[in-house]
Length: 51
Image 1: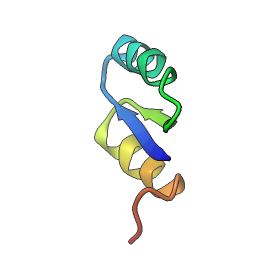
Image 2: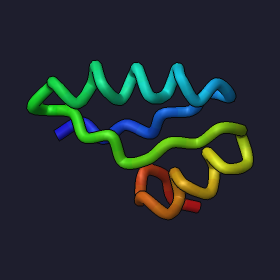
Image 3: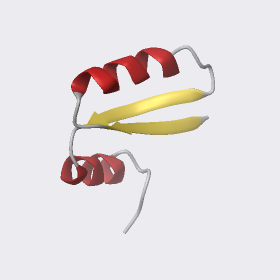
């Protein structure tokens, strides 16, 4: 399973990417962030990165 964190400051971009990626069986969207700081926190919380 491929785990993806969507990051873009435009919410519509994230919404469209989520819709496209949701069709793939082997991709899981684990969250959305709208700036770098939020992305770093979500990536850590989702277990995508470690310290």
